[in-house]
Image (cartoon, rainbow, N blue to C red; front, side):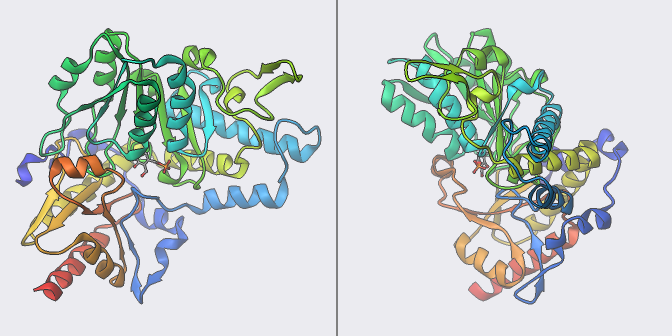
Length: 423
Ligand code: PLP
C-alpha cells in the first residue's frame, strides 16, 4: 500500500530545496513549548487552525498599542498609519497569490464568508431556474451549503463530481458533467479531510473551454504550496488567515477584476460608497465596494504578516519539510494493526485521516489529548464525503512547517496506548 503514494518518494526538486531551521522556526511559535495534561504538546490539528508566530502577534499588538484607529476616513496620523498597514497587508496578500492588482483582493471574515460573498453577489445575479452548479464530493460544507441555498432559491441544480475510493477526483466524469446549463464550477484546492490536491489549473482550463467560471476553495492550500491565481486562471479564489499562521476572523476573496467590476455589492454601509443620498447610492471602487463597515483591521494586518512569514521561510522549504513529515507519518501509521488511512491520492498535502477497527474516532481523540496530542476527530465538515466513503468520522493528523518527527512518534505511541485500552 505504501508504494501507492507517489508522495512517499522524495522528488529531486524536494531534495534540492532549502531547509527549515526547525528549532528557530519553533521558537517563533511560543505555544509549541507548552505542556498539555503534563505532556509536551504535539500539535497536529493544523488543518483546523494553525498556530501564530510571534511576528504576527507583535504586528497585532503594535496596531493596538501604537496606532489603533479606524482606516480610510481619518486625516490624523494614527488613522493614516492604520490605513497604510492594512493596505500594505493587502499588497502582501496580492503578492502571495500573485493577483494582478490589489483591486482583486477583498478582505472577508474568512473562506466561508468569501464564498458567501460570491454566492450572494455573483450567484444571485447570474443563476437562474434550470441552471447547474458543479461542485465535488470532497467539498467542505462551506463550499456546499451556500450553493445548496442558492439552488433552492433559484430552482437550479447542484451537481456533484464523484471521487474514487482513494479520494481522487474523477476527471473524466467531471469533463462529461459540464453541460450548456453549467454556470459555475466550485472546487476545493486541497481537501481538508483527505489531503488530496486537486488539479485546479486543469479543472479551470476544462471549464473555461465551455465558458464556465471557476471558484477555488484554497483554505487548505495557501499555507502549504505556492498559489498563483494567474497560472490557475480561476475566476475566484478564497482562503482564511487562521489556516496560514494568521489570526481568526479574517480571510480574502480573490476575484478577477472583470467579474468584481460587474458584481453588485452584497453588504451595504460605510466605506463601500462614494456618495449617499436617500434617493441614490454611488458605490466605491474595488476593492472597497465589497468591504462595508469597519473592517477587521488588526486581523488584516496580522494576515499580511503571516503571508510575509510564509514567504520568508519559502514554499520550497515548507513543501520539502511537510512532505517528509507526511511520508514518515504514513509509514508509521501503516504499521499499526487495524489502522486504515482514508485518502491515499498520489498528490497529497500533509494531512492523514485514519480509522481504527472497533474504536470510535472521538474516543481516540480524547485519549490522544490526555497524551498531549492534539488532533481533530469527526466528519471535518465534509458529511457528504463521509457518506460516500461509508464512514461516519475519522481521526485526522495534519502537519505544519513547525512539526517534527517527534510529534508523530508521540502520536503513534499514544495510538498504541489507545488500542491497548480498548483490547
Ligand atoms: N474550506 C476548507 C477546505 C476548509 O478546510 C475550511 C475550514 O476548515 C473552510 C473552507 C472554511 O474556513 P473558515 O471556517 O475559516 O471560513
